[in-house]
Amino acid sequence: MKRVYNFNAGPAALPFAVLQRAQEEFLNFKDSGMALMELSHRSKEYDQVHEKAISDLKELYHIPDDYEVLFLQGGASLQFAMIPMNFLPENKIANYSLTGTWSEKALAEAEKFGKTAIISSSKESKYNHIPDSSELIPTDDAAYVHITSNNTIYGTQWSDYPDLGNIPLIADMSSDILSKEIDIRKFDMIYAGAQKNLGPSGVTVVILKKDLLKNIPSEIPTLLNYQTHVKNNSLYNTPPTFSIYILSLVLDWVREQGGVSAIERINNEKAELLYNCIDQSNGFYKAHAQVGSRSKMNVTFTLPTEQLTKDFLAQSKELGFVGLGGHRSIGGCRASIYNAVPLESCVALVNFMKDFRYRN
Ligand SMILES: *Cc1c(COP(=O)(O)O)cnc(C)c1O
Image (cartoon, rainbow, N blue to C red; front, side, top):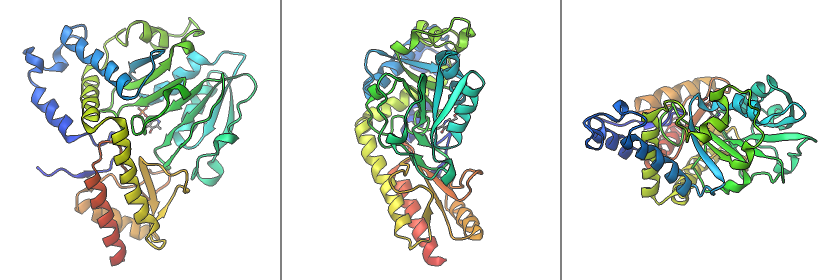
């Protein structure tokens, strides 16, 4: 079997070693005589997987003790609604920085629950940059400030995060969680659908500062209240056991690579390869994102004409490159180079890009 060069935006590439290990353990998990999927979520075997995934994530990402790690369902998209339901009281204003489609969607959910304000935006320039952190000035009575740390569709990424004093900072990190070292303390909540950097779809990771749990209204439906999941260690109801298991294997793999700092070094190298190729193409390839805002996870670029874009995608597909088409909302091309995308895939892509340019 030949593995493709997988540049899918999400669900995305998983480490091959993780898939192999899952295969080895698939039919008979830890000599239980069952597949992991067949185990009770209250069993000792599953409990070990669950606990290990939480403690490994805490350790690898240096999550302090006053933060909770939750495994929820409903994707990052359900967090768009849960955040205002839990953290937006009537007398306060939810503040949003708009840097792409996902922040627009997050804002749209908050609008259903209370007062909102857009405190910075790059919409006017087709979301090709991240507004300066210094432009991010919260309104009076801000309940929280919400940012999208990496904009999967437009290919932009925050490089430094704002310091907001007492106002909680909440970040959708779906497409760059665990891709680089960060100071968790800058955030009051981080959330991410797992299917980009952490594992398969079906589980959403929420990292939540305990302080934030104090004023949650009690009338929220049980399953949509963060308190429920904190009190029950994400086992109030049946969690997505298989997704959490694969997530735990991905965390093992991150550790084997040397941890998040080692992953970050490789990610920098991968992104540099691609952006250098774009910048040194005499304008044949153009990056969508401005220098300084460029994402190290989603590299978005255009070619001179629609026809060349079509040819590029068709020819790359024949050579085993997958997922290079840009999102339908911006067109062009996009290479998603999450943690599990190996350096070799990026080298192969750059070689193809150079070759394609010389031929055209
Ligand atoms: C993919 C993505 C989402 C949507 O995630 P779901 O888990 O499908 O709801 C939200 N935000 C960002 C930044 C994303 O990349």
